[in-house]
Image 1 (cartoon, rainbow, N blue to C red):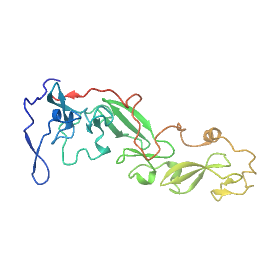
Image 2: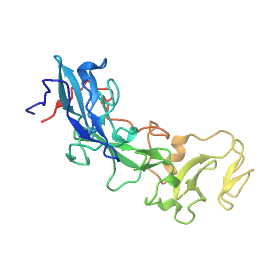
Image 3: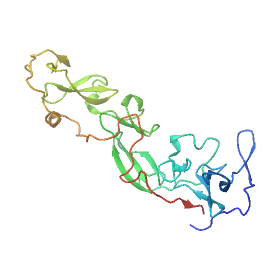
Image 4: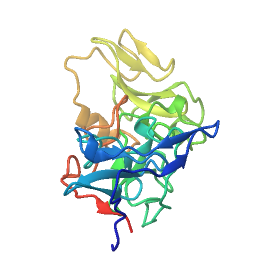
Length: 257
């Protein structure tokens, strides 16, 4: 990727910085213990002391400098995780790939509210929110439906966005709609779900006798109307997972052009 800017003397370039037009001098990484410092103007660039001389590097496309031994790769992190870019700008434009706005990042799905993409070096991996959660573009994580605006609600909840819906022939499981999206629920022990009142009651009811054993989740899901979802990650709060093997990764930063 060609040339690397090198200062042959202490960094004396003054960069315009801050809302009041104050000047800030670029720190020399060779004069610091970490031997790495962020650029004073661009949050996706940093200076590293190489063979006793400062050299300028770019973070991978979509990431910004977070500090030595920090971030998802060597010194670079997702820009939304902290105030890395406060008072700064990004030097490099996005390099898009399929499903990815930048080569590295986490992005919403084009057609689904429960899925999203994690992009690592331009390779997109589809992720699934479980447990009735939806992908929140602002938080870049799976979140409760009431916190996600503008998402298509599930047809099970068309009649009542916050009501209960029977689950097939199950006597002790049902769907509880919250904000237009269903979450699987189980009645307390020795109670059954009443299809008329749409709540858990003392048996018997028209459809259910006194339960003897709790039915299994797998058996109930066979009668349900939602796709079965794997028991894995993605419960809030937290950051969505990266593709397998992506964190951490010993990725050497690229010198700036």
